[in-house]
Length: 246
Image (cartoon, rainbow, N blue to C red):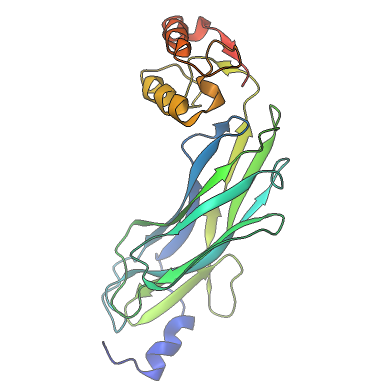
């Protein structure tokens, strides 16, 4: 392991050079969801080391992160999170914890130790599953945001970017995620993107196998093989096809 000087360890507080940046965003397979649906949320860091060279902490790039997921919206307290997974390459003191406080879903943290940063320009920090309130109504929303920090290796410095920056820390920009419960949709639209495309064939199979209510294309209240023929008929009608709720 490399020898770390006191000055280098204190470099955690140093400012980044011009052009270097870090941000965090969240994504889901679709932004339109159905009541009772379970989907995986990905939290990802984007970063630019702007030509920084390797230093005492190793190669330039992502060193670690720590933060949690805040939830708001009409179904924030009636939906739930599970199966939190922190990026396996962040192998120093990993933390993966589900939170039960209203408005908080998950906490994750981890770092690389002293064996170098993870090269950019992006890195998945963690994933977790969210189950939408089964009693949700059309138009209900679940809004998710990241609150915390990421740390970059920049030469001989560890530089912190935070949503609540302290002394000499940089501001971490974030992009949240809003999930909206569908009021009405094309029955053929199985992946929630608002369109009827060949991708919905695989989506129907996944929905059928998982018992997702969207697979009930004939709207008889039962998910059965008969819904496959109903999906084919709905797909062939395109935008003029039947409407399902949800």
